[in-house]
Image 1 (cartoon, rainbow, N blue to C red):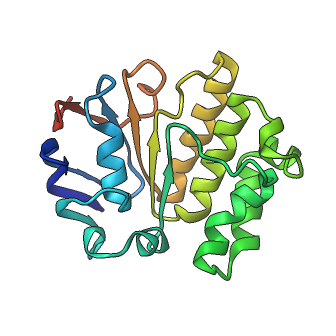
Image 2 (tube, rainbow, N blue to C red):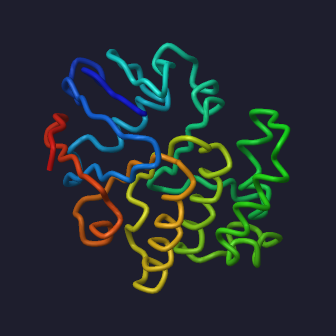
Image 3 (cartoon, rainbow, N blue to C red):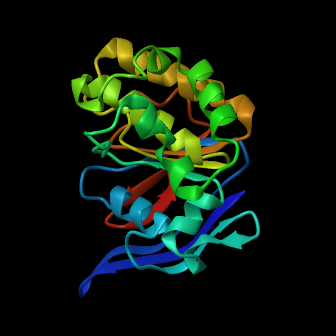
Length: 213
């Protein structure tokens, strides 16, 4: 289970996330739905350690907020940022392998083979520089990279934004296939259009406060 309790985040003197609390069961796909500026990205960045936060964010028995950022990923949390943030000088495979290299993972080859089996289109352009890909293809690579670290939990920030319909459907298929892998997934989106069929539940975020949708 992944459980967030009374999470608070401020940027300078301005409170952004206000007492956010919610929980996901193992293998559950949930939505975090809110307009732009509602606090979705801030919440994700706080969980990953890019912003200071108070409260609790438990993955199993571990409170992630007590750990330095790099150790949060080491506990099986993968993060796909809204803007992808691929390393432009790296090939697709190098970008996907990056979390495993940073964490000195011993099962990187097996994990990569599983990811490429799940997403064969990413395997097909594994040797290409990431800058040669379309924006939609880069989204798939960013998801593959998140999966390299995310053995237990995925935080996906606006994964469907700007995708052509065919790629959006394909991304949905990939995420649906994760339901059998016992990976919990929290998808942040501005609305439910692309994710309604995937979600078991949704949370609404408004002005930094989270409630059931």
